[in-house]
Amino acid sequence: MSTPTHARTLVASDLDRTLIYSSAALALGMPDTQAPRLLCVEVHESKPLSYMTEQAADLLARLTDETVFVPTTTRTRKQYQRIQLPGTAPAYAICANGGHILVDGVPDQDWHATVLRRIADACAPLSEIRAYLTATTDLSWVRKHRVAEDLFAYLVVERERLPGDWLDRFDGWAGDRGWTVSLQGRKVYAVPKPLTKSAAVREVARRTGATLTLAAGDSLLDADLLLAADRAWRPGHGELADSDWTAPHLDVLAERGVAAGEEILRRFRAAAAA
Image (spheres, rainbow, N blue to C red):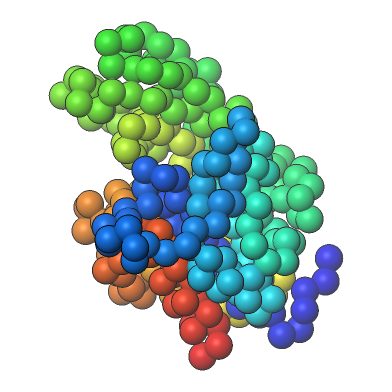
C-alpha cells in the first residue's frame, strides 16, 4: 500500500463519545432552535444509532484528504463496519482495542498473530478471566457477560448496584495475571495488558512513514493512545475527564458531547497544517 507523499501526519482517533455520539451522549444543552444539524453515521437493527454534526462531517471529510486518518476503537470489527464516516474511506482502521488492524477493510492476519503471541506470553488465558467473572458475579447487578473478538471480556452492569469492594478485588486478581480492569460507564472491561491502541497505532505509523501523530479519546482505554501521540486532545466529558487525567502534551477541551467531536476535528486540522 502506498501513502501520499504529502500525508505524513497520522490522526488516530477514538470514535464513540469522541467523534461520534449516540442520542443519549449528544449533550445538546442549547435551546432547540439553536441545536446543530446532525448527520447519522451509524444504523443498527434499522434504527439510527450514532451522529456527528454536519460541520464535523465536513471537517472530517477534509481531514481524510489531508492526513492518514485512522479510526481507533475498542469496537469489534463487526461493530466498526456499521459506521459510515464521511470523507475518503480510511486505508487503515484499528479495532478491538488494537487487536486488529484493517487494511482497506481487510484484517491484517500477521498483526493479529503478533498480538496473540504477545498476550499468550504475558497473560493468563481469557478462559480464566471468564471463569472468575462467572464465579464472582450475579444477576442482581450484571446485565450481560460479553467477549469481544476472543481477545477481552466485559460486563454490562447496574453501576449503582455494583458491590463496593468487588471491582478492587477483581482489579488486583486480574492485574497479577497480566490483565487491566476498568469501569467505564455501565461496562467493566478486562483487557490483556499487551492489547493496546498505542501498539497498533505505532505499527500503522511505521508502515505509513508518519512523522507526526495526533490522537483524541475520552475513556480510560484511550489513555495509552493519548500518551503515545505527539499531540493529543480529550473532551470535557468521559472517564478521563472525570478523573482529571492529563499529560504535558494533552489539551483538555471545554466542549462536551457532540460539540466536542466538532472541536476535536478543528484541532486536528489546525495541528496537521501547522
